[in-house]
Image (cartoon, rainbow, N blue to C red; front, side, top):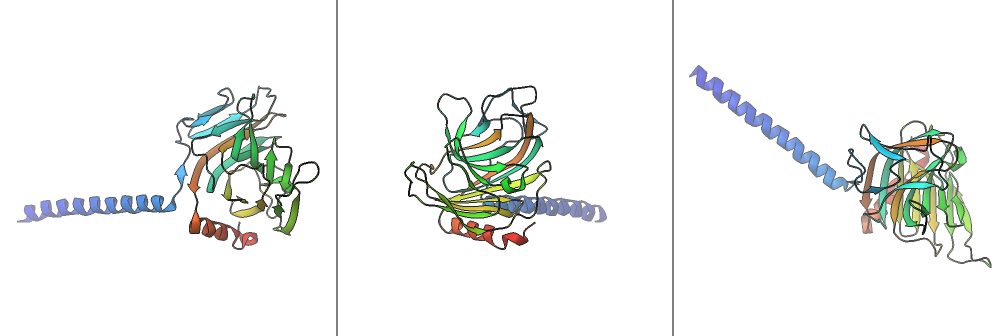
Length: 262
């Protein structure tokens, strides 16, 4: 009887343990599904990405891009084309090294005749405080649309030179000053004409860009900038497509007390 009870106890114990593990796995899977973000990097190789293989590689589960020992004539990008998001929430963890800057492109377009070059909206990864997380229009002739801490509206009306004019409509502040040589989380929320950038949960710009030349969807890209040698390390790239109420809720959550986020 004692032996039987011992065997029964061990058997039921294993069943309970297996059931508990299965429950945790189920709950975890459900939370990931509910979160709605899809990973764009498998942690092993550059499957799904395009770039100059002399400049980009994967080391220990991290994407590493470097211009050390190379001279590049144009800004070059590691490009993810498959998703071509329109309305979305993008998260990227990135570390910047060297006396230069980088950027995260989105809704970007190829530049004809130049390999791995993109034009369009960019979240700047720049060590200068006023440029951290700013909204820059790469290779379009528009340049800086909103610096760090600015709310900006761009009308669809063009001037005599065929250009739209950004108008600063509010201030978000420029604190804290981020150390870009450390891991930081960069976020882009793009819904229709609204573009919101965040670093570590802090809103850096809030832009309504009605410029008719800005595409509604396109590629995602990580930048290596021409000039002084530089490197970037990138991980945890995740994308969620947005629509309807979820898009409005995502914008609302991002803008809630941005000055108090750390």
